[in-house]
Amino acid sequence: MEPNTDQPNIEAILNGDSREFAKIVDAYKNLVFTVALRMVKNTEEAEEVAQDTFVKVYRSLEKFKGDSKFSTWIYRIAYNTCLDRIKKHKKETHHIAIDEIEGFEIKHMDNALHHLIDKEKSKLVKKCVERLAPKDAALITFFYFEDKNLAELAVVMDLTENNVKVALFRARKRLAKVLKEQLNSETIYNYE
Amino acid sequence: MNDQEELNQLMDRFMNDDKLETPPLDFTEKVMTAVHTVQRRKIVYRPLVPKYVMIIVLLCVVTFTVVGIAYGDMTLDISQYLSGLQDVNLWFTNFFHSVKISNTLSYTIVLTGLMVCIQVFFLKKHFDKRFI
Image (cartoon, rainbow over all chains, first blue to last red; front, side):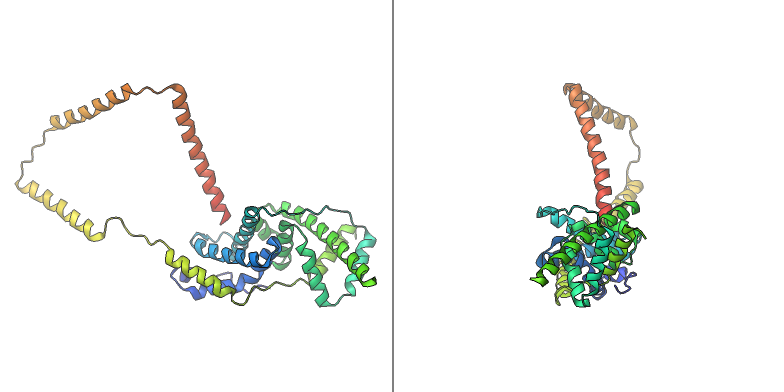
């Protein structure tokens, strides 16, 4: 979980205290970088986008009115910066069709996951989220790392809470589909 | 429990194993270097006319007023002033009389003005929203 830096000393930063700003960077860099990496799908670009995000945060600190949580404000800037980068480089995002997953398939996936050790599981999560479209990947990442707060997510992604629920429902289904494919391919690979 | 709820629970359990990525070790350092560059470039408000010049101008105005009141001839010829104003008015009337603007052009100017005003409002709202 992210450390509690939700009340940063903005006045000190505006007066030139760069150490205060470094604290903010340290507190939010991991989630900002993770979201950037999962959206732009390239480590170097993700680093650039994350840096741009913090520079934008610094430039706009005066504009932060406190209407939302400070973290929400930073994540919104990060999300928009990623979208701008994707638009600028006209990256093609392949959309995964939503398939109905039957009850027995869910149990099959659950069993398969039980046999994996923690390290393998986190590797698999990473692989699956990477395959999602940028918006889905961002939504899933923010949702699970930001205490499943739909209201904050709605602000970050500029959607209504109901739309976030719908988007999350679809993103989870797509993630399940990717997971199913991944587990199938890994099982086949293990048998070969 | 229906399939959807089961799937949601499975996804929740699956995502419990998700871990945050870490940027390179010198990430904060790089950001701070970029921030320092921004700090240096930041525009500092400086008045167009320095304070001391403003004070000198103010002193001159006060001095001339005081001297004018004390030693000058304070009778003000209002009729001369009014005729001057009328001359200016006449010049404007003559000038605009010779310029002919068609209806289409005037409608275009008004509509363009309106569109610019509306777009400025929406653009401002859009950019404000991007940074909350």
